[in-house]
Image (spheres, rainbow, N blue to C red):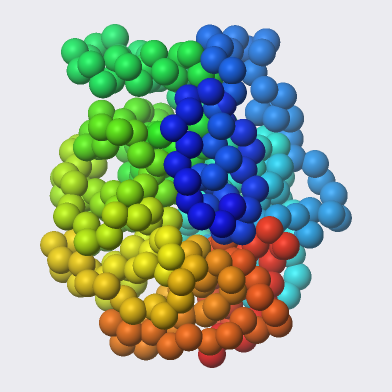
Length: 366
């Protein structure tokens, strides 16, 4: 998560990124690895075959996302670390995870069923509220799926994507995932990476060709809202599907910088947030977007709806931007307990629980 999002156009490596906010971290440092054929089983990266280490140090690990699973909190982060808490973030326990790759996002559809995504094309599923996880997809399988789909397609873009996947191997990270129900979901990531499922993740199919993203911009956020699917990404990319993901259309965007995430409020309002404190609000399913005057010059890296309905945005320098009018305006609060560059946020028991490279923090919500 480096300060400032500078797109790396090189196709020569996808190194591990470091920095101060989830999406900035996931973007900046994207330097591709040496081009090589899709790995065979014997050359699959070890981190895809080894379980996350069980260690007390996991409680101090860098975390990139946190969410609710019923009354439980579940956080994900580096080296396959998954933590869960049943006391609103006062204490945490480590989950059993089959890989050691960095996990970037986590989403639940009910109190027990959820998915996490991350580096090397990993998608994990849990059915016991985050205590144990099973691998559903990795980058090797993703590359093979893209190649298979390309064989039946006459689309040049699909053919080029398949060739690129084959040459580069399982290097691409997923940045976000969302589900409309326990069966239908979409995971998005670097360089237009997109996979969909209609059977709860038993099978994941490439969705790259459904997105009008000819320059293969990174896709940072995805949300199901009111029967539609919204995707945000680099250079003001705003996409919408009104047919359950069968196709997507580009939306006019008043901002041409990167969006790092989407907050979908219970009211149906959407807030797209990103670089330099920019945030856009839509109350009509993406037909119109209005600027939210945040008053901060730094990137917004996390957002959450509080239990009482207020909307909270977190800046890269730890500022809390709170809206009590459905995102029309915000009030700025200084960091509690010192600046913390949040990469994810969840609300629980009147508190905010923040994920960051410095671990998890619990603080009282204003």
